[in-house]
Amino acid sequence: MENRFDALFRPGNLALSMMAFAGLTLLAAFLWNVAPSFVLLLLIPALAVSFYQMVLSPVYGLRMDDERLTVMTEDGTRVVPFKDVAHIRVTDQESASRVTLVLHDGAEVAIPFDMPPGQLDLIRAVTDRGIAVRST
Image 1: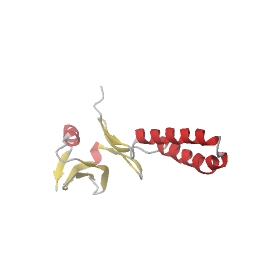
Image 2: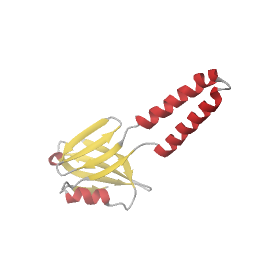
Image 3: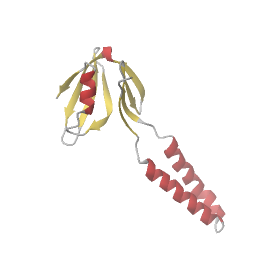
Image 4: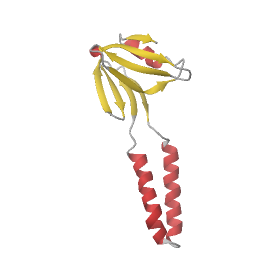
């Protein structure tokens, strides 16, 4: 069995996007008999944008398995083997903590989400894999 940790999120709210798409679809169907040009001009592009946001919204976050970390950001996906990670730096702030991977060559990879204070799941998953955690 693979020891896996996922901390993934999707920007926006999928349920709200689906409700907006359904509402726009019902409005377009209702208005089609009254003003088809209005539907074609405004509601069809709005439906297309709503559909685009539902289907093509990226997923950001961090995935860990037994051998590597996968960091998914808006700049793309980066796979980092555990042997390349020197330590994890946790920077405490008032409402959340920022997490950064520090590699042996000095490069840094920011984790694309803030960790709520007191949440130890990520720290526990990293230390279970033998990576040091430093707090600043």
